[in-house]
Image (cartoon, helix red, strand yellow):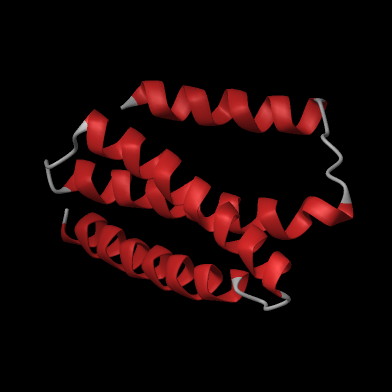
Length: 109
């Protein structure tokens, strides 16, 4: 349990010390990609609490969700449609659903 927390702390520290500036043209792509990645992370936490975690499923879902969300934003830009909003809606709803289930698991303990 301490290894993920250590990784999180190192990630936060690196993010604070080495700020990355993303061009405004890529902001849409990065926002949906980060939202999809967060959805996968919360899904992994939920699976861990349910004793159902599988590394292969987590990694494949993490990268597939992130790439799909960025691809939807790209296709939407090419078509002139705000298609990235579909990804924001779906991944946002799943994120809050997973967070609610995680909260219930933690409160039961």
